[in-house]
Structures are given as C-alpha cells and as structure tokens.
Length: 129
Ligand code: THU
Image 1 (tube, rainbow, N blue to C red):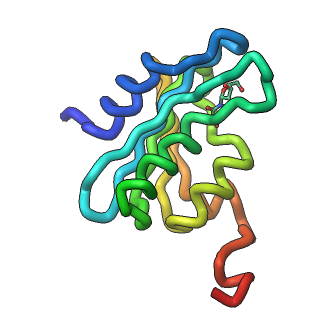
Image 2 (cartoon, helix red, strand yellow):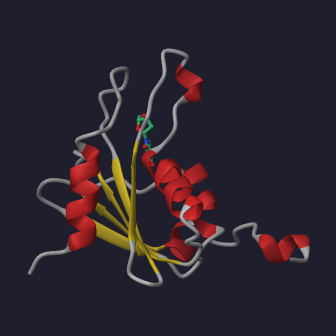
C-alpha cells in the first residue's frame, strides 16, 4: 500500500540543496486535518546558515496556519535511517509532543515517538503558556 507522506518526503529530498555535505534530506509533515507540508535542507557557503529539512517543513506548515502535527517522515540515504537532529526535535515538539517520527532511506525505515527522542522537552507550558 502506498504512503503519501513517505512519497512526499522522498519527492522533496530530490530538491535538497546540499552541495557541501552531499547529505540530501527531505521532510514531510502530516497535520491534524490531513494536509501535508514539506521541506528540504538548504545549505549555504557560510555553512552555519544551513537550514535542516525539518525546519523548512515546520515553517511551511505554520505559514499555512497548521499547528497540530500528527506525523513526520524524514527521507535520507543514511544507513541506518537517521533520526532528526536535536534542534529539529525541539522545533517539532512545539507543535506535537505525541508526534510520530519516521525515518526512511531507500531500503529501510525506523520510527519513534518524539517524546522518546526528546524526553523532558522544554515547551510552552514551561513558560506558563
Ligand atoms: N540535516 C537535516 O536536514 N536534518 C537533520 O535532522 C539532520 C541534518 C541536514 C543539515 C545539513 O544540510 C546536512 O543534513 C548534513 O548535516
């Protein structure tokens, strides 16, 4: 059976701009109402300005008014499939701590709950919000 979220992550991975690391990443987020938002990593000659794929996808979702994330798929060519970086775990946690995080590479996949990847995260409630 096809999985539209995995297909979207793999499709946007092809758009990754990663001439420095050559580590091409695509991310696709499914939100509460079923819409899908995507992002790829965007590197820069000034290396520290690089944006992760997940960060771009979060921005695209929020800019469209979507704030309740259900599931995110990260597509790479890594073996084994790589989990999101720490900074992206924190960014994702703002919009869904019960989020399912799935990582896919061409032949394998792994998945976690975001709360496993980022236990005791700092969130809006810590600010009293
Ligand atoms: N990268 C992501 O896009 N997401 C992650 O979760 C890990 C790392 C990107 C950043 C950089 O362009 C390349 O992968 C190598 O670190």
